[in-house]
Amino acid sequence: MERTFAIIKPDAFAAGHAGKILSRIYEEGFTVVGLKKLYLSKIEAEGFYYVHRSRPFFGELTEFMSSGPCIVMVLQAEGAIKKWRDLMGATNPAEAAEGTLRRQFGSSVGENATHGSDAPDTAAFEIGYFFSGLELL
Image 1 (tube, rainbow, N blue to C red):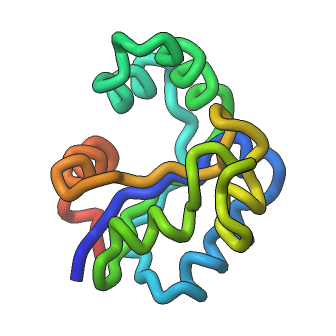
Image 2 (cartoon, rainbow, N blue to C red):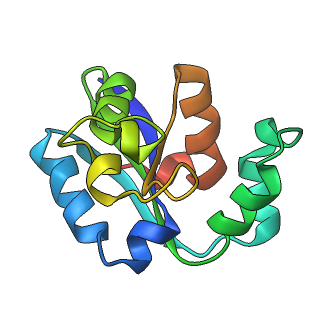
């Protein structure tokens, strides 16, 4: 079994879509082994997205991610990283396939409802940023 990190972002949370997204996660066969509702500070968001600090969208991204509550999760399944990325869909909701979370709940490239790790090393960092080993059941 593989684990990946996932976020229900502030836009989806504010719009009342968190429950629908969680329902899809379970319907698609994931096990949720860690879950927290958080309100990230700007500094916490900057630490999480540090790999993008030199990119032009960094400020906008960290402002958005610290604009309201979100849900952070650790998901487990066979091939969890790819499976979660497939369920999320393309970064741009307009380009995401029908039936994906970003197509259904995202509104723009910046406010696209969900986040997911893109590789095992990224997942390890992202999981460790928000969860201790004792919190993963």
